[in-house]
Amino acid sequence: MPAKIRKHKAMNTFFNGLDTRKEMIRMYYQKLDKLPISYEQKMIETTFGDTNLVITGPEGKPPLVLLHDTNSCAPLALESMVELTYHFRVYAIDVLGQPNLSEELRLNMKDNTYGKWMYEILSRFGLQNTSLVGISRGGFIALKTLIFDEKRIARTFLITPEGIVNGNPLQLFMKVILPLKMYRATKSTKYLNWFLEEFYTEENEFSKAFLSNVYLHYKIDLSKAPLIRKKEALQIKTPVHIIAAEKDLLFPGKKLIKRANTIFPLLSEVVLLRNSKHILSKQDNRKTTELIRNSIWL
Image 1: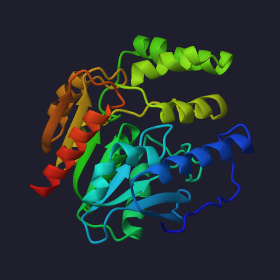
Image 2: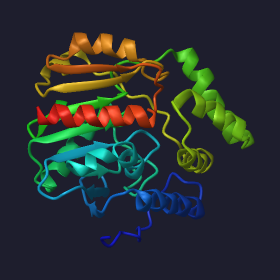
Image 3: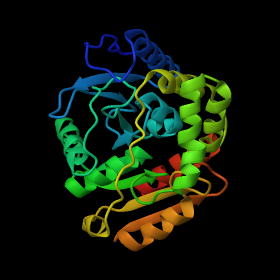
């Protein structure tokens, strides 16, 4: 196993104390070290903040960049997409301003700052002809990357992506915002379970423990990304693949696919996962990784 980066410089934090941040880091490595992969870590300086990457997969294989969801981290994205690490050189990025090892700075979602940040990372590693996989907020960042400069990207896969449609505001308040507020106020796990049942297709004990720490002790990111404009989408020439979930409260699958079909000029593929919620099941993750692998090798 390569040497791991275990020391982290002091920085302003969204956590309410040093101990709770240390607990997040402990859990981060707990998940990462249990994955069936060999890996190396790179902490790189960018104009927008120090950024951590977990790099895995056989050297010499085609490059694939993986972007995780909001309030998440690279090891959780790697867990869901682990089969990709057998076939690609995977660069899993800890998104800035999230509970992970990158600097705790949240970028402007209304302009192309995320795209500029990603372009710096791709340039730093000399990545060309790269596949880009974005999960939820990661999908939004992938779109911002394409809008800013898509020349290094061969194709993009958006999994339950943010930034194309939004769910019903009343449902989101009742089933997302309210239980989170109640959990923070009461620390009763029934409210955490209420939230998780709406988001997760199947139970995930590690994610429950990780999010329990995050939701109680971290300034969680509840910001909503702006929807991509048709004018912006029409500029994208890179093939785009979309995997949507039928029962996704945040970004309802049928609604998402309907709008995507009207705005993307090179929409290569759309898949609607039946009976799936925002966070996919293990079975649907396997379907998704197979779809990605087969689409790249066509």
